[in-house]
Image (cartoon, rainbow, N blue to C red; front, side, top):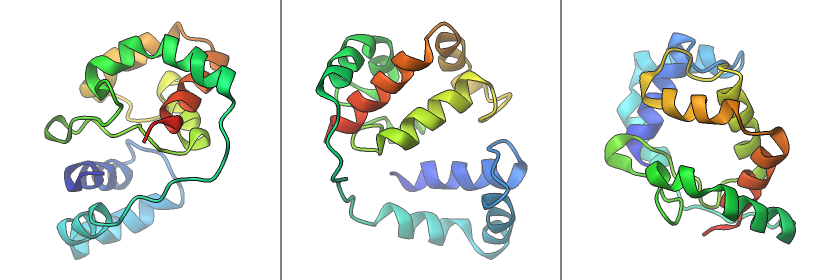
Length: 141
């Protein structure tokens, strides 16, 4: 992920816009100690691919359902660092599914206009389809 994405995530945790009892106190400390250094460090880490085998049928259903996501996240799911749109490709399916459910329930980044269109779209998508989307993006490199 891009350093800008990490900076925003830390800001959101510290401000309570991204809920996590574990991360909030650490994010507040990081803001005091230096967000840029930590964001740069994590952004420089090599991505490691998971070893789980995706459900091929779920991946195909997710590929079909992913068209609206590709507008912002790109045709390969690599995101857009300039717009702080995160990479979805290769992220763990469980993580992606959980984040989609949090966005859908407006428990992730409440009030953030940058993700309001996505949240509106997610409200009409069933949880099984969210799991399929997660499987699809997790299967990308």
